[in-house]
Length: 187
Image 1: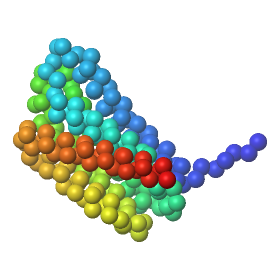
Image 2: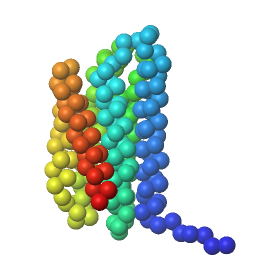
Image 3: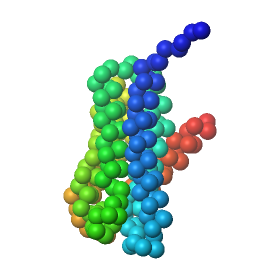
Image 4: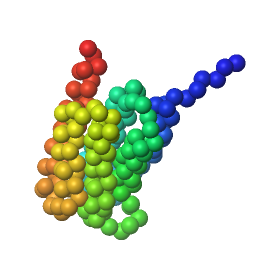
């Protein structure tokens, strides 16, 4: 009976998937808690929007990770991918609601915004570093830098209207990216 060896890519993929799976669990649990208790609490649409966007980003990240199947993996490349996944999973920790805190959900959202969005911005920034390190720089990296700037701005600026507009823009961009990736796969 033979045992297949785990490739470097499979090792990295499984590690990243486990880390991101923890983040997905936090997001889904938080959204479920808000839905379940929606009659008792003032739902935060900012928090729900940011959670849904982060959910979409994590799913796109997991799917697009297949593009790294041909990479010759090294410890620094692994650390970049792991750090990106950890940053996204930690963002999910900060964005989730705490119904026992006594604070409104919007107050929690704004109290945690710096940690949430600066950590979240590490995802696209590490992806750019990964592209540079593997010699696969593309136009997508400019989009990643733009997304990181918008995410950092959400961490700095405490303005409800600004957050609504930027979250909608980011959600639309993430949806477009998802659709484009899907169209290229149909070819």
